[in-house]
Length: 538
Image 1 (cartoon, one colour):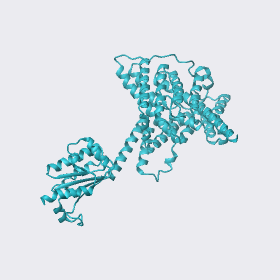
Image 2 (cartoon, one colour; image 1 turned 90 degrees about the vertical axis):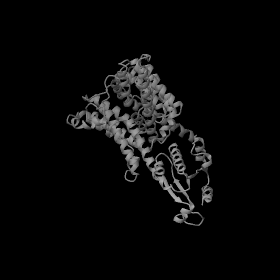
Image 3 (tube, helix red, strand yellow; image 1 turned 135 degrees about the vertical axis):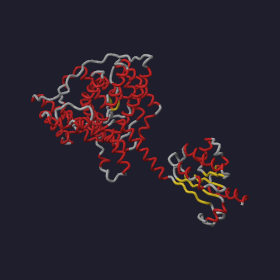
Image 4 (cartoon, helix red, strand yellow; image 1 turned 180 degrees about the horizontal axis):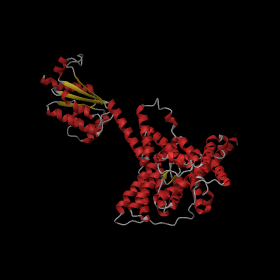
């Protein structure tokens, strides 16, 4: 009985966490959805429609239980470009959104989502810390009572002007909010999350004291009308390209947010299911006239930090926005932006990846460099560009390490057993040389082999010892074939020793200069055969 009571209490705690997490995420999502809707050119209501439809569908069908989905900055920028490209025709822009949703579903069905797990941790770390700094930078102006900037760099550069004309009442509300969210005891936060306490208390204080501060403002009311995506033969290629762009960008954005959620909660998401859920949600957004979106990092972290751990939190987030849409908007329209700024600054501080920041002095320099590059690109350029650059930089560093592990040694074989490898006389009598290839044999290390071909000229038999090669790519196979062809042109016999797996790989290649007659498995046997080939001439 005691065990069942504990399970019941645990379930109740999860429900409470999901409810407050989803509610807090909904409050944070409201101004963002309205702002993204306005920025896209489709109107504030489109942002709200997209947050509700995608937020609800992705929460129910997606593969990341605590993820909050809705309009995001990168998706809004691409959608705005699509709307301009089709001459402001909302129906055609929604056709691109529909194509994007289909692309995401297709990626999920072919199980392409698993590729995100190959993103190195320094890239994720730089992305997370960059998101945290962006959140903090963008909220400094609202905290001081000024209008928010559209970019983190603009917010930082414009800070001196904001400091010269700040609103004291807004700053007071923001500072009190920061005190509440940072200093509220955990015993209270377990019952009512600190961000929600700050939101209710500071909004009430502002209303009772009659503070003259910026608030969320008017919220659109009423359900969306059914919209039918449309396209013409003249624009279908444009819509297809824009749709593929939206689908790919939304997939990357969502899966990166899933990785951040995994890192914060120490869980694992189902990437392919997430793509399918996001795709279905964006397809429905096209019919509701809603802005397309993806998994939203900031809102997801707000949800997690406020206690959200299950799908219910995403449902609560969407239902809260729906309630505002159906008439409860006036209740949230008076929330001061400075209070939201204080809550979001706490989120930004929490999302910084202290795990790697604490290891900056002792971590490998290459990993720190990747993290720093991704961090700077995230803050100063773009989230997707930062991740792409980070992955490419990581790949370059890995290739450099693999090249460093590769080795090439050419040594003469003594005519008789017992004579040293460095015996010049034995070398001349033997007429056999071994080209010993060690480590990874791939496009990055093939130049070592081709550059040293002259060291083998003049011998009678060349034995390629690739027995210690763990893998060989197509570039290495072609380089080996070229080397064999050049030696044969000099009337030098060739044998190639490879492991069984690579032996089968070379046979499948059907290379004319690497037939089965030249391939061997055992080096000692190949050397004996090479000596036998030299013996008649001697």
